[in-house]
Image (cartoon, rainbow over all chains, first blue to last red; front, side, top):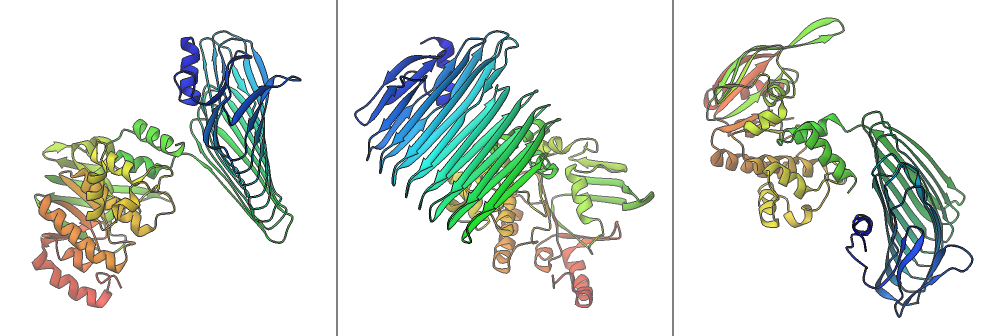
Length: 305
Length: 239
């Protein structure tokens, strides 16, 4: 595995080489390595680029790594990955995409992930997006995540985009069944002229369905971010969306929430806060001996932790 | 150790020049000093000026003989001045352990961080990994604020109304904390307070009125007189 791949894998998945357990590494639009286990089967699709990940019912404490790495300029990669998670399974899925763009043309990755989560199954989904460029080539990622959750299931998505992605439109939608819970925590930082649009659409369909969508973001320099969220309560259910953004330099952030109660027992909350770092936070840390720059860095790193 | 010489501070208010501090001249040496006085008398302004949040319109501030008038907050902090805010600041994502580590200037292990928290009456293990966000109560934040001062252990600690927002039970313990600090860092505390019990453990009391220092006296000399006045205006009783 070459050095660029290794570095990208470290950034997006925290791994130094091929991961343990089930994995599928996609590099420059092609399969680079794949491993199935007794409980987790990874099968390439025949009609489109991508894979099916079949996780047997009852699979416990196993993980699947499906990183995507790109090291070419001008490459447009599109992939469809479907996850079928059996009843009572409890698994961690580590996705993520890293682009090292060596040239002057745009490279992109569009990943369409669908999750079908069986009864009482539990999924932790970690996704990190990272980009770096040698010249002027832009890096673009448009992930689409579609989640369908059966009775009693639980999913937590932690998604992070900290640097090097010039343009992104992130679409996430969830249909949540009886007693099921979807938690999404998103962290985004943009700088220079980057743009990030994130769009959530959650339907609380089953009795006692619940969801929390929490987005924390920092927009620096001349970057722009837009947070859209729509949460629909169609049953006795609880939903909460929160957009919390720090603007720095000439960064701009828009928050466009919609909460829709279609049922008398649905309870929905939206909170949005946008503003620069509070002056008193800087003063407090300066009074502990930090410079203004160190104080800013400490506040941002805590906020996006 | 700390000296304010001919310090004035004024602001522009609707086109008019308003003097907030007038002709402040004090010298603080190895004392536990309390500053008291009615609301709006300039106490907090003076504290902010000592730690560098605001700069005097004219005059000079000396710390250990060095002119610090033009030094910023960070530079003064690194010289050995600490400040406990009247209203502690909340931080999303920064934990109690992290802020204490920043205050101590090194990564604290559990035992070290616990020691500071125990001093302010917080059960350490319940708090170390909690964020300084809106889930902490005002009283809890206030105690963490004071724990930061202890963790810094600097030559001079300036505390702006540490009793504000603390419940009665905790207040009793807080007095013990200040007594301990006084013993440990003898002569290094400057505390703004309205509370008789805090004034009572000070060596010296500075009385401020209308932006000026109206009196600097030993506690035993001034406190009985202040309490007499307080029977009339009740501000010292916190009632």
